[in-house]
Image 1 (tube, protein in one colour):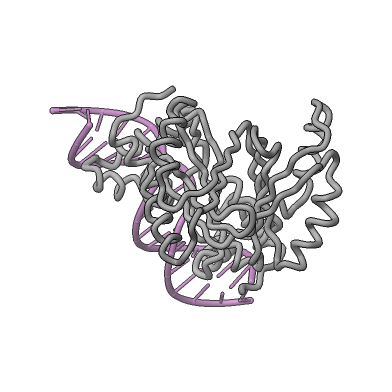
Image 2: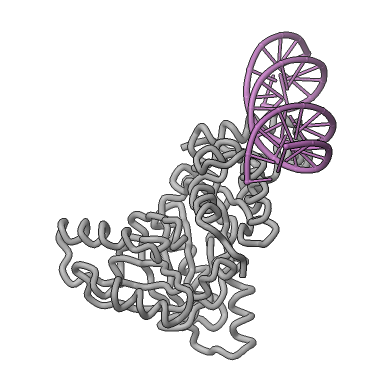
Length: 151
Length: 151
DNA sequence: CTTGAAAAGAACTGCCT
DNA sequence: AGGCAGTTCTTTTCAAG
């Protein structure tokens, strides 16, 4: 694990919200020079604390107005069954995230679709036919807020 | 909604996985010049399809080894109750995402903690004391895979 | 749409405190 | 660790085909 001071945490918090901010402007906000700030960011990248930079897409504007969370309980779950399920589920383009979890469900899926009929198609033809699927629970996303986490 | 061709979708797919790739290199991959690629990306930003660029942090390396998904059912849910709950839940630093959903649960929370004892503390002192909380279900994250979505 | 060029700005390096 | 000065690279804008 890596040692982080207050400034490092501040940089991570700022960049988590907007990764386009440059080292010069960021440094000014924390009372540091551009190279000093840049070196801190580079250190965070090299150590792996910063795993990458990703785009934040607006699903609505892409024509995907419906996001549904599915909780999947497998009917049969041996080693083979898990791998079969994972391979099949990652081949479905509408599945954005696959989370293997422990608890009420075995997997949690984030699925996006153009509209409700489109979602029904994905659910019936793609999800319900996955190998080993038992029970499936659904929750439709109304609104969402992301936060920096406990930095 | 914005009209996108195959190249736009390709750019979004590429940048979703790694937003550090520059216009020149990206353009080469799609047979476009640097300025042409840059104009496309700018158009996607201005139209709001690209909502922003965020950091992808490694929670493990930050010392947060435990991620738990909570499904929360409210006991009382009027207009006031929802706002009270949302205001209180967003004040908890360990809560990374708050999703207002329709279905089995009313809210779904992504919570990170240093370890299981730390999680128990958050659950007992912070989550269970939220205004209006009824039943709470938990799923512990084992592994996760994110994908570009149906672009 | 393209290429080519030029200016501005950000990223990166080396050296010094 | 941090700062300063300089170099390299990308971004950004422009002209012209």
